[in-house]
Amino acid sequence: MGNPRPGSKEVKECIAFFRACQRQLGHKKLLVDAAGGHGGIACVFRAHRRADRAVVVDLYQPTSFNNLRSAWTESDESVKYHIADVSSPGWLASLLDKEASNLEPSEIGVVSCHACSLLSDELIRACTGSGVDFALMPCCHGEDSRKGKMMLNTAKMLGIPHDVLIDIARLGIIEASPGYKGSMRSIDSSITPQNRVLLGLRESEADAEKRETARSASLHRLARKYRHIGIPLGKDILRDQRPAKTLLMCSCKYCPECPHLLAQHRIT
Ligand SMILES: C[S@@+](CC[C@H](N)C(=O)[O-])C[C@H]1O[C@@H](n2cnc3c(N)ncnc32)[C@H](O)[C@@H]1O
Image (tube, rainbow, N blue to C red):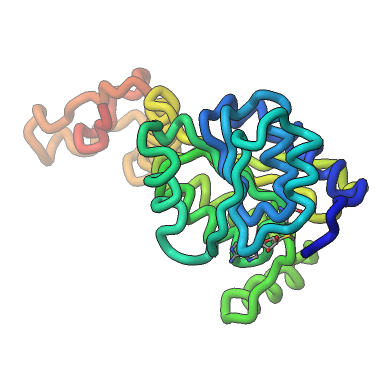
C-alpha cells in the first residue's frame, strides 16, 4: 500500500515542517501525527528528541511507515501507528484517554502535514477542544458548500489566492479560540506550494493577562478619542446641571491626564 520509499519531496517536507514549528511547540512527551500517512513527521520529531514518543494516526498504514521508522528512529516502540478517522468527533479525546491519561495537555502536541481540506478545520477543532498545542500545514483547499463559494468569491474580489484567504481565516479562528495564540509560518515554496504552517499554542496566564490589558487599553484609547466630541473642551458642561460629585475624575491607568472624563468610563 502506497510507495514503500517516500520520494525526496516528502523527505524534504518532513524536515522543513519540523524546522518551521519545533521550537514553538517545544519538547512533548507525546506527539500525535494526524493524517500522518508515512509517519515521517513523527519520526523526525523522535529523531531530534523533540518527543518522547509519537503516535501516527491515519485511515490506513502504508508500507513506507515501517521503512521510515527503521531508518529514522532507534526503537519501534517509540513511534506507533493507530488506525482512526480524524474527522470523527471525539477521536483525539479517546486517543489521549488511551495513550496519555497520565499526561497534562501541555505535554502533548499534534502535528499534521498536508491535512486535506476540511480535515484541517476538524483538527483545529479537536486540538482546541483538548487544549493541546498544534501545528498544521493544510492542503487541498476549498469545499463544496456555501462557505466554500463565499471564500472563492471573496478571494476573487480581493484578487488574492483562494488558499491564502482560507488559511488566514483559519488563523483568525485559532487566535479567537479561548486560551490560544495563533501564528503562521511557512516552509520553502519550492518544496511545496501548500507551504503555510498554522500554529495554535496554549496561552499562558501571563500572556492572557497581557492580551486583556492590551485589549482594554486599545478600547479605552479609542473611546477617549471620540468621547469629548459631545463635550466642548475646556468646559464643564455638566457643572450647572448635576451635583458636582457626579463629575468624578477618570483615574484609570491609561489616561491619567484626562480629568474631565466621567466615572462611568472608568475601567480600572
Ligand atoms: C496528503 S496525505 C498527507 C500524508 C502525510 N502527512 C504527508 O505529509 O505526506 C493525506 C493523508 O490523510 C489521510 N486521511 C485522509 N482522510 C483521513 C481521515 N478522515 N482520517 C485519518 N486520515 C485521513 C490519508 O490517508 C493520507 O495519508
